[in-house]
Image (spheres, rainbow, N blue to C red):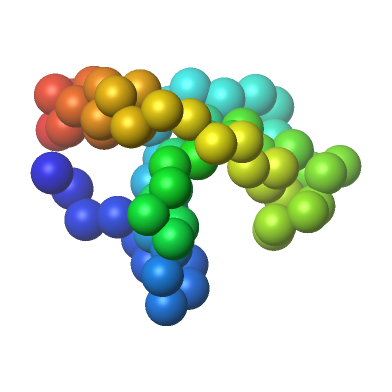
Length: 71
């Protein structure tokens, strides 16, 4: 699996598949043992443009597997 960018001491973030909108991409992250996703939104700017929503571990794993298959 491609290395995931560290965003803080206990969070990692990764872009998925070039999926996104005019402003940015779909990203996933793990923080505090939980998994999240977000599509970058320049108007949101809650977390450097991301508004993170928690997702199930199996969805997180599937999105990462999809990205890994593209490498």
